[in-house]
Image 1 (cartoon, rainbow, N blue to C red):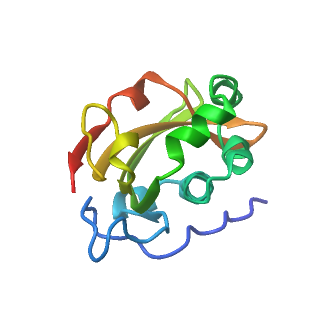
Image 2 (tube, rainbow, N blue to C red; image 1 turned 45 degrees about the horizontal axis):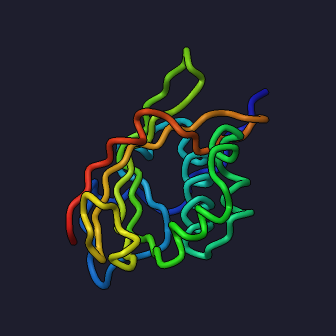
Length: 161
């Protein structure tokens, strides 16, 4: 007998990368109607919520708990702290979740807004507020999803708020 997985929090949101109100917006990771239909939606929402919470609270240990071993091994704590010391992320919407059954991973398209000191912004867009559209690759490690480092992560779309 199979038990039904826990439902994702909240109701699906309109698929949009816009954030209403003050930026960066809500700290809650929400799901588009498309992402809400994916069978792993609850695990995706849970790991991404913990991921963004760790960044917003500047908690490297919490971040390390939700990323893959490969990503942890390539990210020194001092560099991570320096990179995120002024970052505030919000308005996160999981737009789409695609399963890669062969690779046992998920590709997640997510949009969000980040605010940061201009000196900490990406060199390609030195702005204090950026709207992102990024593909995060999630892998299963020890039976739980983790945010991995993958080529898909390296080409985000970004624009000034």
